[in-house]
Amino acid sequence: MHDFWLSCGHHLIDRDAGGGLLVTDEFLKVYLARPELLPASDACATERKLYATLLAAPRRGITSGEISAIRDDDARENWELMIAFRDRLLGQRTLEAAYLDLIRRGVGNTPPLFLNHLVQLILRKLLDGCEDPFVLRAAELLFRPQRLALHDGSLVAADNETVAGTGATPTSPLVSMFSSMKTRIPIGSAAINSRWRSI
Image (cartoon, rainbow, N blue to C red; front, side, top):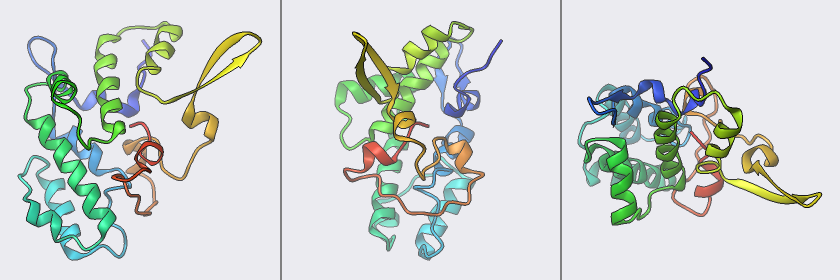
């Protein structure tokens, strides 16, 4: 059977007795592999220490003071968003519950990419064993930004990322781990939709 959407990291998630998706340390480290969080060559000692600390213990509590001490404005904002999202995930029993909590109580400043990632993981569980490429492509419409166009009287959807061409940012944190890219990308600004690509 073909394993699909490997880059979402579904194989790093545990399941409870009822099939709910459980956060693991390995899964949390996937976010740390993103280029937006990798310390740049000129990163301050505070940021480097925070990064190393979380690599060793991804669930460790992080104070606002630790983040506010980061010198780079973009890096500080990236860490604020990431830690807030991580804490919301850890505050719920399953990823499904975390998603419901975000929707019911408000997403706040949660980057759309993070929401899309949760949807992808939940769909990956629901579609486990599916081998119909049309069903899988239809499911992608729920978490991958699309560009729509009329062609010969039909509405055609294409991944925005694919149409726009591959950008400088790797599309997967798993790919990012093997990338040499060190560019700092702000994730808390208007660039959030276009620069944080699907995990």
